[in-house]
Amino acid sequence: MTVEITLLGTGSPLPSPDRAGPATLVRTGGATLLVDCGRGVVMRMAAAGVLPVGLTAVLLTHLHSDHITDLNDVVTTHWVMSPDPVPLRIVGPPGTRAVVDGMLAMLGPDQRYRLDHHDDLNEGPTLDVTEVGPGDVLELGGATVAVHATDHRPVTPTVGYRVEHEGAVAALAGDTVPCPEVDALCQGADLYVQTVIREDLVRAIPSPRLQDILDYHSTVEQAAQTAARAGVHTLVLTHYVPPLTPGDEEAWRALASAHFDGEVVVGNDLTTVAAGAS
Ligand SMILES: [Zn+2]
Ligand SMILES: [Zn+2]
Image (cartoon, rainbow, N blue to C red):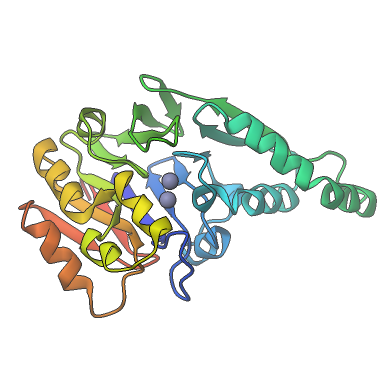
């Protein structure tokens, strides 16, 4: 195995009793990367055998609340479980630093309580925030992480991450409609993880606010068309809107398979998919 992804949360803003919010773990030889921090992420990380102190970096695709709501839990748990001060690397699009600063302000009382109470805790969380844009390339724990543009307008800026290790590639697109930049992000990737919505099911729900989401997400069919155009090996669906109900997996898969000959993974939280030499 050279690159392995674990779906930590396959849910969306719509609450689900068994799907955490959007988050995906990417593990390579020396890197453990957390892409987005949706609802319940630290619980799912624990189930996957990873604690926040074990993260090489947190990568944020964008600043929509469903993708960052539990970043504060990652930060606090990383802080209180580190015996010595260890910086937590957080990478995200422009605006990330301001969001992190606001989150630290929200956590101010908690930090004061803990610093006052614990004699062996002498400083607050140390965060190393890097704001990135398309074209940036980072080396994280031996993995090469290339930043690509995505199109989730009017939400902007948004980015996707192409993680490469020993020739194996996992592409994590986040929320986006199909576009040439996403084709480049996942070109020839072993694993392409795409947040998706079911257009047919969403259209059947008479809520104007829900209908609005159709214009800035990939449908299942569009994700499959992107995968086919880009010559992807395996398409991994996540962020199901509406929540995927057990027994409905084959209906989701069929919509993708009509447009893409490769493997389609319709997983649950903690589904793991590996690529590369074993
Ligand atoms: Zn979004
Ligand atoms: Zn989302």
